Length: 189
Image (cartoon, rainbow, N blue to C red; front, top):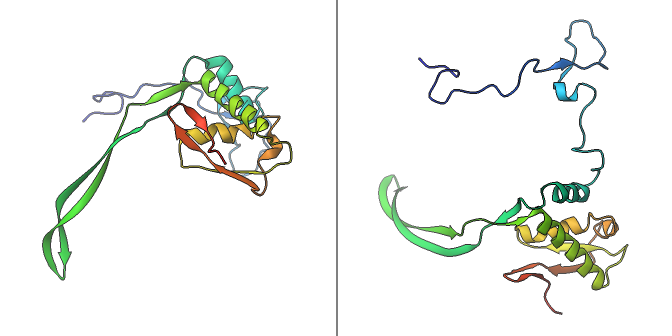
């Protein structure tokens, strides 16, 4: 019988004891153990990765400064849609029958990445473009897009300090986001 320590893929200990410590500011309650924390957070819970990070945009900016040349946002393109007809067993009126079922299989490309610096630049470009279109503080917007990485720069644009007021609460200006091979653009009116 193998164990977690001697099996084919033994687990390695990543952290040294102590695994938790008593929270120094906790109150002792009779009949209960004192609350415990990870040793890295013994002086208080960690609520941000760095002191200067207080928004998602600030996190993106810090990430681009620290890891600018590393892959950041990845996506894959649809290469081809394959449709196949296969026989499957199905119970119809108490009898098992072989019936045709159409299967759709998506062939996707390998991942292609934007670096963190390129991603930050795309957010700043979108913010600049929206300003050039005439959006100002107090305007309301609505993002209408498929779930893809191309709408993320639009979302993060509204988290930049200059654009923060543009995102909420009700849409008044609406345009779809299209994905083109040469970059992001909005359709002409």
